[in-house]
Image (tube, helix red, strand yellow):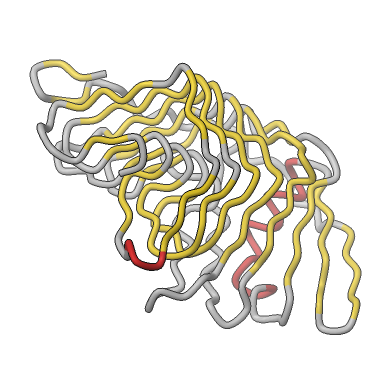
Length: 232
């Protein structure tokens, strides 16, 4: 992926613009729960996140494994710090995504506020390649918490010579905790600094904790001489 100091990978673009279906939902008090069972319903979430994220108490649950092979993916950018969204994978797997963006894009609440909580999810067989910064399989420029999430069999490549902050679970982790997470058989490649197998970079270190996370059979390949680590 690097040759003579220049990333040689290519951005792979999916060609399928699949149908968008609204998932089933229910409301209890001020909490709205959406149950996602298909790729078309996950696409609906990415298309409508800005409007539904204005509600109090948004919970999204997976009801099946989701195959994103061939999907022209639009990231789920949950960025409302006043109404943080919880995404509960219920131990299901999302797999097969080829994209230039993370699954959750850049869930950025700003001012060090949590805007997204992700838990009980498996990410598998993702190929992510981008010329921008904050690159990850799960979340790029991230404000929030990640718990019981596994990223495995993925390739993450920073294609720009000045890309910063790329990792398996988060590109740049700005606030919150990463707990009981695993990275297995993940390859991270790039040129510039701040690459890691959990998170590429931690911007607000006093507000961040990493607990009981494991890395297995994974590697980072980077030509810059600074900013490489298992966490940041």
